[in-house]
Every structure is written in structure tokens, then in C-alpha cells.
Length: 74
Image (cartoon, rainbow, N blue to C red):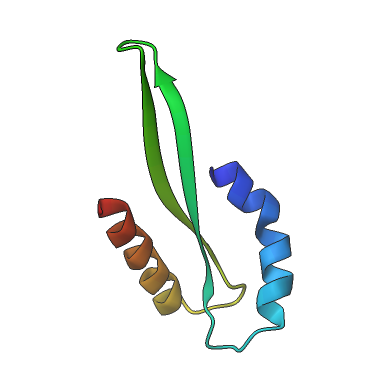
């Protein structure tokens, strides 16, 4: 997941550069389906990740981190 976020960060940064400066980054929802070999069951999981806007403040990065963490808790 982190590799995918890093790989596409330049794409998101180009998009964010055209947006209002109030947009502080990109939050991404990943959904995965896999098989639990131990139980032989299909398992579905989701995870939220983030890619902060370049040169955003540390405060804005913390806001995104808190949001992603709260979304992961649900």
C-alpha cells in the first residue's frame, strides 16, 4: 500500500497543484479481498492511507493522519 501511494504521489501532486491551497492532500481508501489459508475463508479488509500536499505544514499533515486513523478505526 505504501509503495502504491509513493508511486502515484507525483500524479496526485500535479492534481493538487491545480486545486485551491486549502486542499491539504489526498486520502486514499484501499479495499482488499484475500483468502485466509488458516480458515479457508474469504476475508475483506479496508485501509486508509494519505499523501500530503507538497510543502504543506506539519499541522496539516497531522490533521490528515488523525483523519486516516479515525477512518481506519471504523
